[in-house]
Image (cartoon, rainbow, N blue to C red; front, side, top):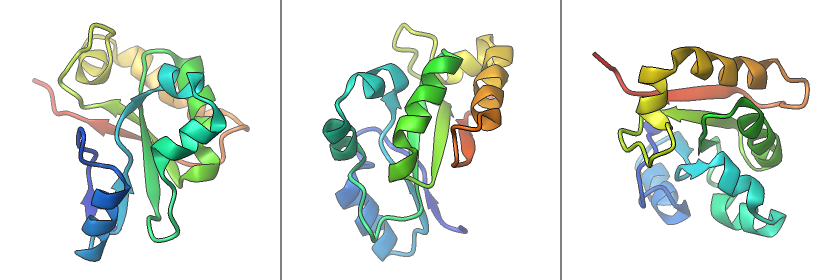
Length: 136
């Protein structure tokens, strides 16, 4: 895809994604959700969060986490509803949990472990990406 709508807080729901696609966007992201929260949801709630739609593909589901096993489990749970999963390493808001840009800055080895474990898993059939923020 050449034109991508990066994930935005409270602006990456289905209606926005379909609008963006009507203006030439070829790839969209869901809103970010913590892997832990996603795993705590029932299947129907997971689907309601992602809002899969035939005109909204390719679609990447974006997770925040600092736990390799959580990311992998959430990715596996979401993969039938999307085309790839993303580890958010760009959000500047820490949320007190060491997610996003804070994780990338303070624990780059853990970031690599999260991605490596998911990408190497035979359970995960979709690509793994990372949204990053350029740090000093």
